[in-house]
Image 1 (cartoon, rainbow, N blue to C red):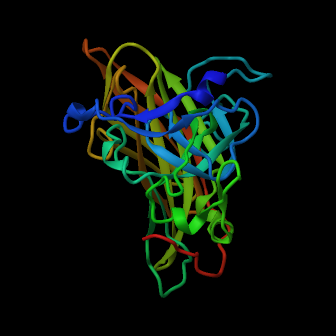
Image 2 (image 1 turned 45 degrees about the horizontal axis):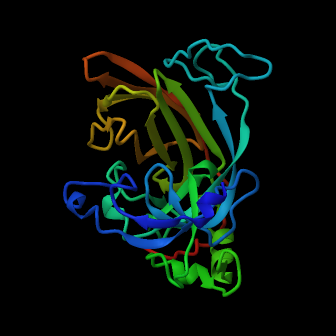
Image 3 (image 1 turned 90 degrees about the vertical axis):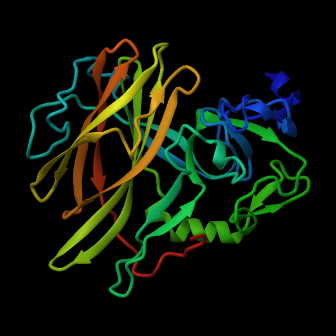
Length: 347
């Protein structure tokens, strides 16, 4: 492991898995970024830690950790090691519809709120868009704004490849200088400013990552992270909004392509909706050995403060074999909102 801490880190697009036709000819032009450090096997990374994303290759900086509950349907429970398939036509929660289902025990795991280096965003080809956090904020009658903070992401502990740098301003993001301050002799050499602490506390309901859901079907792992966005008054009813982030990973050797999506959305108001369509967010992503992962975000609204979602992705291999990849069921829960407006930094 000591080798990591001494190795110079040079960034080329092919090395990071970010190659595209427009930059492939420049792959021999490398620039020194810093020195790779040994990944932490125990304990959390500190605020200000620079890193490379293990899957998507971008440079980033850690702002603060979240302790999430991970519900992994691939892991056996202590009381129930059954691997019986889940019926995707019924929700596996204590809901008024559906039958009995396997109960999944959550396990705590560390994720990090991070900033993405804007210089790397154009080369993250295996994500539908540069990740951003969107939320409605307060539901006061005078505002119907949708706030978006681009270049803000959530990264699991095992996806962090830490490195050190001598640069005093090593990352391009409009919030970097607002949130972090260079501190000579500190490790890492960037410390949180009061602005970051205040911003985290003020926007906690919209930023908080609490639940992560995972399930694997025929070597395709689907991870879902839901976020509550807020609600709006709409005539006689309140409309509640959530954002959900989905990551697909090909853990096998065969190349597969996502062809269709099939969602079931249950609302506490008693409605059950089915949504079908081609691809996701206008794309039919291909998961191969070269680019095994794809990530996107979408939104859903309910006329009730809670509900559930589950479904399948129709996947197709190069030989024409098609199968349904299960989307792990997850709950949509609203949160108590602060009567004051959120503190907005960014757009």
